[in-house]
Image 1 (cartoon, rainbow, N blue to C red):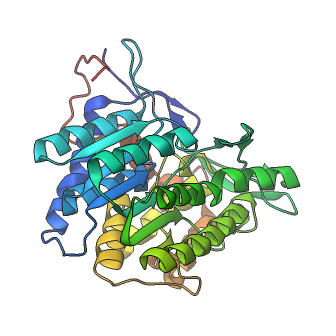
Image 2: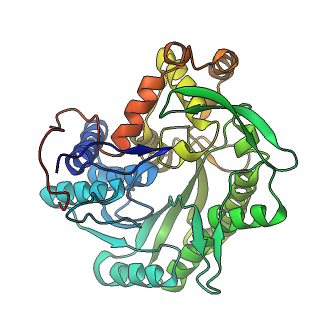
Length: 393
Protein backbone atom coordinates (compact mmCIF):
# COMPACT_ATOMS: atom_id res chain seq x y z
CA UNK A 1 0.00 0.00 0.00
CA UNK A 2 0.96 3.64 -0.42
CA UNK A 3 0.99 4.90 3.18
CA UNK A 4 -0.30 8.40 3.86
CA UNK A 5 -0.92 10.16 7.20
CA UNK A 6 -4.41 9.86 8.66
CA UNK A 7 -4.95 12.47 11.34
CA UNK A 8 -7.83 12.26 13.78
CA UNK A 9 -7.82 14.98 16.40
CA UNK A 10 -4.43 14.99 18.12
CA UNK A 11 -3.26 11.60 16.86
CA UNK A 12 -2.14 10.14 13.55
CA UNK A 13 -3.60 6.68 13.01
CA UNK A 14 -1.09 5.65 10.33
CA UNK A 15 2.69 5.34 10.56
CA UNK A 16 5.26 5.04 7.80
CA UNK A 17 7.79 2.24 8.37
CA UNK A 18 10.61 3.64 6.25
CA UNK A 19 9.97 7.15 7.54
CA UNK A 20 10.17 6.04 11.18
CA UNK A 21 13.37 4.12 10.51
CA UNK A 22 14.89 7.13 8.72
CA UNK A 23 13.92 9.39 11.62
CA UNK A 24 15.65 7.04 14.06
CA UNK A 25 18.74 7.08 11.86
CA UNK A 26 18.75 10.89 11.90
CA UNK A 27 18.98 10.77 15.68
CA UNK A 28 21.73 8.15 15.58
CA UNK A 29 23.75 10.29 13.18
CA UNK A 30 23.49 13.24 15.57
CA UNK A 31 24.63 11.12 18.54
CA UNK A 32 27.64 9.75 16.67
CA UNK A 33 28.62 13.27 15.71
CA UNK A 34 28.29 14.65 19.24
CA UNK A 35 29.72 11.78 21.32
CA UNK A 36 33.11 10.79 19.97
CA UNK A 37 34.83 9.58 23.15
CA UNK A 38 33.42 7.11 25.66
CA UNK A 39 34.24 8.10 29.26
CA UNK A 40 35.24 5.30 31.62
CA UNK A 41 32.16 5.86 33.76
CA UNK A 42 29.70 5.76 30.84
CA UNK A 43 26.82 3.29 31.35
CA UNK A 44 27.48 -0.20 30.07
CA UNK A 45 24.18 -1.96 30.81
CA UNK A 46 21.06 0.15 30.43
CA UNK A 47 17.38 -0.56 31.07
CA UNK A 48 14.91 1.84 29.40
CA UNK A 49 11.31 1.50 30.54
CA UNK A 50 9.33 3.19 27.79
CA UNK A 51 11.88 3.02 24.97
CA UNK A 52 9.96 3.30 21.69
CA UNK A 53 9.20 7.01 21.30
CA UNK A 54 10.26 10.49 22.38
CA UNK A 55 12.63 10.93 25.29
CA UNK A 56 12.73 7.21 26.10
CA UNK A 57 13.79 6.29 22.58
CA UNK A 58 16.40 9.05 22.64
CA UNK A 59 17.76 7.64 25.93
CA UNK A 60 18.22 4.23 24.39
CA UNK A 61 19.87 5.69 21.29
CA UNK A 62 22.33 7.79 23.32
CA UNK A 63 23.24 4.80 25.50
CA UNK A 64 23.71 2.38 22.61
CA UNK A 65 25.21 4.54 19.87
CA UNK A 66 26.97 7.02 22.14
CA UNK A 67 28.58 4.50 24.47
CA UNK A 68 28.11 1.06 22.92
CA UNK A 69 26.06 -0.01 25.95
CA UNK A 70 23.93 -3.11 26.09
CA UNK A 71 20.32 -1.95 26.18
CA UNK A 72 17.09 -3.62 27.22
CA UNK A 73 14.01 -1.69 26.13
CA UNK A 74 10.39 -2.08 27.23
CA UNK A 75 7.36 -0.70 25.41
CA UNK A 76 3.77 -1.47 24.46
CA UNK A 77 3.29 -1.16 20.70
CA UNK A 78 1.16 -2.77 17.98
CA UNK A 79 2.69 -4.72 15.13
CA UNK A 80 1.52 -4.16 11.56
CA UNK A 81 -0.91 -6.39 9.71
CA UNK A 82 -1.20 -6.91 5.98
CA UNK A 83 -3.73 -4.07 5.70
CA UNK A 84 -2.84 -1.78 8.60
CA UNK A 85 0.35 -0.09 9.67
CA UNK A 86 1.96 -0.75 13.01
CA UNK A 87 2.33 2.00 15.58
CA UNK A 88 5.15 4.49 15.16
CA UNK A 89 6.84 3.06 18.24
CA UNK A 90 6.84 -0.40 16.66
CA UNK A 91 8.67 0.90 13.61
CA UNK A 92 10.97 3.07 15.73
CA UNK A 93 12.06 -0.02 17.61
CA UNK A 94 12.66 -1.87 14.35
CA UNK A 95 14.77 1.07 13.21
CA UNK A 96 16.77 0.83 16.41
CA UNK A 97 17.21 -2.94 16.01
CA UNK A 98 18.32 -2.68 12.38
CA UNK A 99 20.92 -0.03 13.22
CA UNK A 100 22.07 -1.82 16.38
CA UNK A 101 22.53 -5.11 14.51
CA UNK A 102 24.54 -3.33 11.83
CA UNK A 103 26.74 -1.76 14.52
CA UNK A 104 27.20 -5.07 16.36
CA UNK A 105 25.45 -3.83 19.52
CA UNK A 106 23.77 -6.18 21.98
CA UNK A 107 20.09 -5.39 22.51
CA UNK A 108 16.86 -7.02 23.60
CA UNK A 109 13.30 -5.68 23.69
CA UNK A 110 10.12 -6.60 25.55
CA UNK A 111 6.78 -5.61 24.04
CA UNK A 112 4.18 -5.75 26.78
CA UNK A 113 2.61 -4.08 29.79
CA UNK A 114 5.51 -2.47 31.67
CA UNK A 115 3.23 -1.97 34.69
CA UNK A 116 2.82 -5.74 35.14
CA UNK A 117 4.81 -8.06 37.39
CA UNK A 118 5.41 -10.27 34.34
CA UNK A 119 7.32 -7.54 32.50
CA UNK A 120 9.55 -7.03 35.52
CA UNK A 121 10.19 -10.77 35.82
CA UNK A 122 10.96 -11.08 32.10
CA UNK A 123 13.35 -8.12 32.23
CA UNK A 124 15.17 -9.45 35.28
CA UNK A 125 15.62 -12.85 33.64
CA UNK A 126 17.23 -11.28 30.58
CA UNK A 127 19.47 -9.08 32.74
CA UNK A 128 20.62 -12.03 34.85
CA UNK A 129 21.27 -14.34 31.92
CA UNK A 130 22.59 -12.00 29.24
CA UNK A 131 23.52 -8.52 30.44
CA UNK A 132 25.26 -8.17 33.74
CA UNK A 133 24.32 -5.68 36.41
CA UNK A 134 22.44 -2.56 35.35
CA UNK A 135 24.16 0.80 35.88
CA UNK A 136 21.46 3.08 34.37
CA UNK A 137 17.69 2.73 34.61
CA UNK A 138 15.60 5.21 32.61
CA UNK A 139 11.91 5.45 33.47
CA UNK A 140 10.04 7.13 30.61
CA UNK A 141 6.50 5.75 30.50
CA UNK A 142 3.70 7.94 29.15
CA UNK A 143 0.45 6.03 29.40
CA UNK A 144 -3.14 7.21 29.93
CA UNK A 145 -4.03 4.13 31.98
CA UNK A 146 -2.47 1.63 34.36
CA UNK A 147 -3.61 -1.68 35.77
CA UNK A 148 -2.51 -2.31 39.34
CA UNK A 149 -0.43 -5.50 39.18
CA UNK A 150 -1.68 -6.70 42.59
CA UNK A 151 -5.39 -5.79 42.65
CA UNK A 152 -6.16 -5.75 38.93
CA UNK A 153 -7.84 -2.36 39.32
CA UNK A 154 -7.53 -0.12 36.24
CA UNK A 155 -6.76 3.55 36.75
CA UNK A 156 -7.17 6.25 34.09
CA UNK A 157 -5.43 9.60 34.24
CA UNK A 158 -7.22 12.87 33.49
CA UNK A 159 -6.01 16.32 32.51
CA UNK A 160 -7.96 18.60 34.82
CA UNK A 161 -7.31 21.62 37.03
CA UNK A 162 -7.82 21.45 40.78
CA UNK A 163 -10.28 23.76 42.52
CA UNK A 164 -11.88 25.84 39.77
CA UNK A 165 -12.63 25.27 36.13
CA UNK A 166 -10.11 26.77 33.72
CA UNK A 167 -10.74 28.51 30.40
CA UNK A 168 -7.71 29.06 28.23
CA UNK A 169 -6.55 29.19 24.63
CA UNK A 170 -5.58 26.14 22.69
CA UNK A 171 -4.71 25.27 19.09
CA UNK A 172 -6.46 22.69 16.95
CA UNK A 173 -3.39 21.65 14.99
CA UNK A 174 -5.43 19.65 12.48
CA UNK A 175 -7.49 22.68 11.42
CA UNK A 176 -5.12 25.48 12.43
CA UNK A 177 -7.77 27.06 14.63
CA UNK A 178 -7.10 28.95 17.87
CA UNK A 179 -10.02 28.74 20.27
CA UNK A 180 -10.86 28.68 23.96
CA UNK A 181 -11.26 25.44 25.85
CA UNK A 182 -12.93 25.11 29.23
CA UNK A 183 -11.81 22.30 31.51
CA UNK A 184 -13.92 21.23 34.47
CA UNK A 185 -12.13 20.81 37.81
CA UNK A 186 -11.03 17.41 39.05
CA UNK A 187 -12.64 15.53 41.91
CA UNK A 188 -10.72 13.46 44.46
CA UNK A 189 -11.01 10.27 42.40
CA UNK A 190 -9.59 12.04 39.34
CA UNK A 191 -6.59 13.18 41.36
CA UNK A 192 -5.90 9.80 42.91
CA UNK A 193 -6.32 7.96 39.60
CA UNK A 194 -3.89 10.31 37.87
CA UNK A 195 -1.34 9.86 40.64
CA UNK A 196 -1.70 6.08 40.27
CA UNK A 197 -0.97 6.27 36.53
CA UNK A 198 1.53 9.11 36.27
CA UNK A 199 3.09 9.25 39.73
CA UNK A 200 6.09 7.38 41.08
CA UNK A 201 4.56 4.13 42.32
CA UNK A 202 5.51 1.99 39.33
CA UNK A 203 9.03 3.46 39.20
CA UNK A 204 9.40 2.36 42.83
CA UNK A 205 8.09 -1.13 42.01
CA UNK A 206 10.64 -1.46 39.21
CA UNK A 207 13.56 -0.35 41.36
CA UNK A 208 12.49 -2.55 44.27
CA UNK A 209 12.22 -5.56 41.96
CA UNK A 210 15.64 -4.92 40.42
CA UNK A 211 17.16 -4.41 43.88
CA UNK A 212 15.60 -7.59 45.25
CA UNK A 213 16.88 -9.57 42.27
CA UNK A 214 20.43 -8.31 42.82
CA UNK A 215 20.85 -6.92 39.30
CA UNK A 216 21.83 -3.33 40.16
CA UNK A 217 25.46 -2.29 39.82
CA UNK A 218 27.51 -0.29 42.30
CA UNK A 219 26.93 3.41 41.61
CA UNK A 220 23.72 2.74 39.68
CA UNK A 221 21.79 5.79 38.44
CA UNK A 222 18.08 5.94 37.73
CA UNK A 223 16.20 8.86 36.23
CA UNK A 224 12.54 9.59 35.50
CA UNK A 225 11.36 12.33 33.18
CA UNK A 226 8.96 15.16 33.90
CA UNK A 227 7.83 18.57 32.69
CA UNK A 228 6.98 21.59 34.82
CA UNK A 229 6.57 24.67 32.64
CA UNK A 230 5.70 28.13 33.90
CA UNK A 231 2.81 30.61 33.97
CA UNK A 232 1.06 29.70 30.70
CA UNK A 233 1.11 25.94 31.35
CA UNK A 234 0.59 26.14 35.10
CA UNK A 235 -3.22 25.62 34.98
CA UNK A 236 -2.61 22.21 33.35
CA UNK A 237 0.81 21.18 34.70
CA UNK A 238 0.96 22.92 38.06
CA UNK A 239 -2.22 23.28 40.09
CA UNK A 240 -3.76 20.30 38.33
CA UNK A 241 -4.01 16.51 38.38
CA UNK A 242 -0.75 16.13 36.48
CA UNK A 243 0.92 18.43 39.00
CA UNK A 244 -0.12 16.13 41.85
CA UNK A 245 1.26 13.15 39.94
CA UNK A 246 4.54 15.01 39.43
CA UNK A 247 4.72 15.69 43.18
CA UNK A 248 4.40 11.94 43.75
CA UNK A 249 7.18 11.34 41.23
CA UNK A 250 9.40 13.63 43.31
CA UNK A 251 8.41 11.71 46.45
CA UNK A 252 9.38 8.43 44.80
CA UNK A 253 12.67 9.90 43.66
CA UNK A 254 13.70 10.68 47.24
CA UNK A 255 12.63 7.26 48.52
CA UNK A 256 14.48 5.40 45.77
CA UNK A 257 17.54 7.64 46.17
CA UNK A 258 17.88 6.86 49.88
CA UNK A 259 17.80 3.12 49.16
CA UNK A 260 20.28 3.29 46.28
CA UNK A 261 22.63 5.53 48.26
CA UNK A 262 22.72 3.18 51.24
CA UNK A 263 23.14 -0.04 49.22
CA UNK A 264 25.03 0.94 46.05
CA UNK A 265 26.21 4.52 46.48
CA UNK A 266 23.81 5.15 43.62
CA UNK A 267 21.31 7.90 42.89
CA UNK A 268 17.76 8.53 41.75
CA UNK A 269 16.72 11.81 40.19
CA UNK A 270 13.86 13.36 38.29
CA UNK A 271 14.94 15.19 35.13
CA UNK A 272 12.88 18.22 34.14
CA UNK A 273 12.89 18.47 30.34
CA UNK A 274 11.73 21.20 27.98
CA UNK A 275 8.44 21.20 26.08
CA UNK A 276 8.67 19.33 22.78
CA UNK A 277 6.26 17.80 20.30
CA UNK A 278 5.46 14.25 21.43
CA UNK A 279 2.47 11.99 21.10
CA UNK A 280 1.70 12.71 24.76
CA UNK A 281 2.06 16.51 24.64
CA UNK A 282 -0.16 16.72 21.55
CA UNK A 283 -3.07 15.43 23.62
CA UNK A 284 -2.78 18.03 26.38
CA UNK A 285 -4.89 21.22 26.12
CA UNK A 286 -2.81 24.42 25.91
CA UNK A 287 0.37 22.60 24.86
CA UNK A 288 0.04 22.67 21.03
CA UNK A 289 -0.39 26.45 21.06
CA UNK A 290 2.27 26.97 23.73
CA UNK A 291 4.80 24.74 21.94
CA UNK A 292 4.13 26.40 18.57
CA UNK A 293 4.87 29.81 20.09
CA UNK A 294 7.78 28.52 22.16
CA UNK A 295 9.46 26.92 19.15
CA UNK A 296 9.36 30.19 17.24
CA UNK A 297 10.85 32.16 20.13
CA UNK A 298 13.54 29.62 21.04
CA UNK A 299 14.55 29.08 17.41
CA UNK A 300 14.87 32.82 16.87
CA UNK A 301 17.02 33.00 20.02
CA UNK A 302 19.15 30.06 18.86
CA UNK A 303 18.41 27.95 21.97
CA UNK A 304 15.89 25.40 20.69
CA UNK A 305 16.61 21.72 21.38
CA UNK A 306 14.80 18.58 20.21
CA UNK A 307 14.42 15.40 22.32
CA UNK A 308 17.68 13.73 21.34
CA UNK A 309 19.61 16.97 21.95
CA UNK A 310 18.03 17.24 25.40
CA UNK A 311 18.85 13.64 26.29
CA UNK A 312 22.43 13.97 25.04
CA UNK A 313 22.67 16.96 27.39
CA UNK A 314 21.22 14.97 30.27
CA UNK A 315 23.02 11.63 29.99
CA UNK A 316 26.31 12.70 28.45
CA UNK A 317 26.82 16.16 29.92
CA UNK A 318 25.03 16.11 33.25
CA UNK A 319 25.11 12.46 34.41
CA UNK A 320 28.27 11.03 32.84
CA UNK A 321 30.47 14.12 32.66
CA UNK A 322 29.34 15.50 36.00
CA UNK A 323 28.04 18.86 34.74
CA UNK A 324 24.74 18.46 36.56
CA UNK A 325 22.45 21.43 37.04
CA UNK A 326 20.20 20.69 40.04
CA UNK A 327 17.34 22.59 41.61
CA UNK A 328 16.63 22.68 45.34
CA UNK A 329 14.77 19.35 45.17
CA UNK A 330 17.72 17.61 43.45
CA UNK A 331 16.07 17.44 40.03
CA UNK A 332 18.20 17.70 36.90
CA UNK A 333 17.19 20.83 35.00
CA UNK A 334 17.21 20.73 31.21
CA UNK A 335 14.42 23.30 30.87
CA UNK A 336 16.16 26.46 32.03
CA UNK A 337 16.53 27.92 28.54
CA UNK A 338 12.78 27.53 28.04
CA UNK A 339 11.99 29.13 31.40
CA UNK A 340 14.33 32.10 30.95
CA UNK A 341 12.37 35.30 31.56
CA UNK A 342 13.23 36.73 28.15
CA UNK A 343 11.86 33.62 26.42
CA UNK A 344 8.73 33.42 28.55
CA UNK A 345 7.96 37.13 28.25
CA UNK A 346 8.11 36.89 24.47
CA UNK A 347 5.91 33.75 24.42
CA UNK A 348 3.35 35.46 26.69
CA UNK A 349 3.17 38.51 24.44
CA UNK A 350 2.52 36.30 21.41
CA UNK A 351 0.01 34.22 23.37
CA UNK A 352 -2.13 37.28 23.99
CA UNK A 353 -2.17 38.07 20.26
CA UNK A 354 -2.65 34.53 18.94
CA UNK A 355 -5.68 33.93 16.75
CA UNK A 356 -6.74 31.65 13.92
CA UNK A 357 -6.01 34.45 11.46
CA UNK A 358 -2.39 35.08 12.52
CA UNK A 359 -1.24 31.75 13.98
CA UNK A 360 0.89 30.87 10.93
CA UNK A 361 2.69 34.22 11.10
CA UNK A 362 3.35 34.67 14.82
CA UNK A 363 4.13 31.05 15.74
CA UNK A 364 6.05 28.07 14.43
CA UNK A 365 2.79 26.32 13.65
CA UNK A 366 4.26 24.77 10.49
CA UNK A 367 7.32 23.60 12.44
CA UNK A 368 5.02 22.06 15.06
CA UNK A 369 3.07 20.16 12.40
CA UNK A 370 6.30 19.05 10.73
CA UNK A 371 7.61 17.63 14.01
CA UNK A 372 4.23 16.03 14.70
CA UNK A 373 4.23 14.21 11.36
CA UNK A 374 7.84 13.12 11.85
CA UNK A 375 6.73 11.33 15.03
CA UNK A 376 4.80 8.99 12.73
CA UNK A 377 7.45 8.73 10.03
CA UNK A 378 6.12 11.36 7.64
CA UNK A 379 7.91 14.42 6.21
CA UNK A 380 11.31 12.82 6.80
CA UNK A 381 13.99 13.76 4.25
CA UNK A 382 14.97 11.12 1.74
CA UNK A 383 11.86 8.95 2.03
CA UNK A 384 9.75 8.09 -1.03
CA UNK A 385 6.17 8.53 0.19
CA UNK A 386 4.72 7.30 -3.11
CA UNK A 387 6.36 3.87 -2.75
CA UNK A 388 4.05 0.87 -2.54
CA UNK A 389 4.98 -0.85 0.75
CA UNK A 390 4.04 -3.89 2.76
CA UNK A 391 3.51 -2.40 6.26
CA UNK A 392 4.79 -5.63 7.84
CA UNK A 393 8.44 -4.68 7.95
